[in-house]
Length: 174
Length: 110
Image (tube, rainbow over all chains, first blue to last red; front, side, top):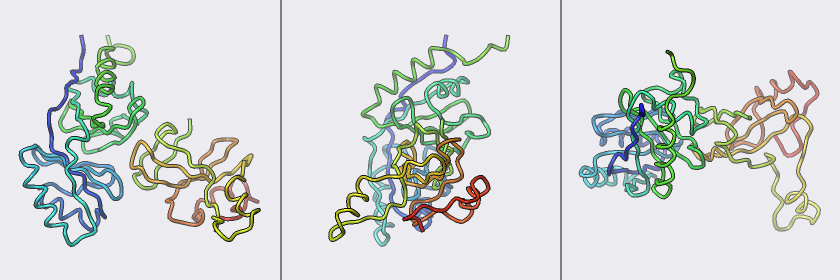
């Protein structure tokens, strides 16, 4: 019996944004319909999410059927700026951890601080999952989404399923 | 386990999320320099028993290079700061001098 189900989130449009977010953040957020994410955070609006990746990189996630329109609008709006918006939907894969034990599953695999005070809603944590780079955040209560390169997707799925099968960490309350 | 706070994203990253880059603030000797200077630039590194300034890359995170000042004996971390500089900021130097009053920023550092 597992408290967490691991599943692939299905296709999602992903646009990588390179540039000075202080300069272009508002433009991208205006097109995406979200707020501008602060350092290390993600801002969501409906099915769209705008995540801070590094001081000069952000990732916009959105439903695949909205991708072409948003990418066109971004490229038009960023034409006069030193910035880049590129469709990287095929580069990465998203997994969903659904259930109250998601924190235990991640804690088995990553050195990141997962205490609620350090990792709560709105935090976008890029870190290491066993041997590969990954990022995770909390789109809704009891659900964690995890992003990794598609080339290591099979490895990450095995990691997550194995960690989920092991049950909760620590002594049981009863 | 060494934990360094990335000055760009503010994440307290453990050693396994970082890639080490060796001694910081090397002065580059390129074409036209003497053989001795070039050899020293390429191969000769500090290996201090105490305070050391190092380069690290937040490889499993934001991907940026930064600097860290730490004590190689006690593993105490005095601070981290961004890479776009020639030497450690004053407040980190002051923190080092609380423990090592005679410490000087090594040659090559500003």
